[in-house]
Image 1 (cartoon, rainbow, N blue to C red):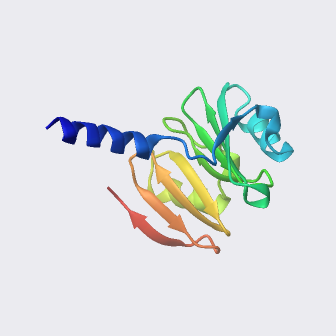
Image 2 (cartoon, rainbow, N blue to C red):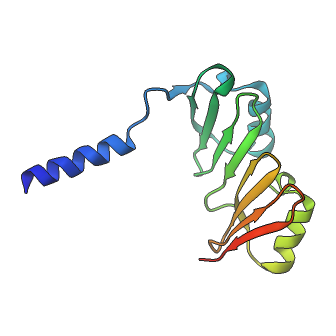
Length: 145
């Protein structure tokens, strides 16, 4: 039984530890675009930490704020994911067509997370619903939990 407990604890530690490639950096080490983004959209929030991962042109950054929000950036400082936890994603980050779709089909629900990749968007709403939009901003998937 002790061996099982030790094994489970070791397994948990291994899966939650920071990879050797990740490291904490100061806010001023973010690309200028990423710094400007945080200052514009999260001006009233305090940065908890900044983590970088990868090397050179493949470097990614993750910014955690004290209110629980997290923002991911690519090596050029362009946001790739905004997770506002219990708050609404800043409206200016959401394409108009996507925003209108959510307002008309999910009344009263807030967009809590938005992720973009090669022109497509994935959203998570305040009720746990996941939406995916293609490059033409057409809904391609709805997953209501």
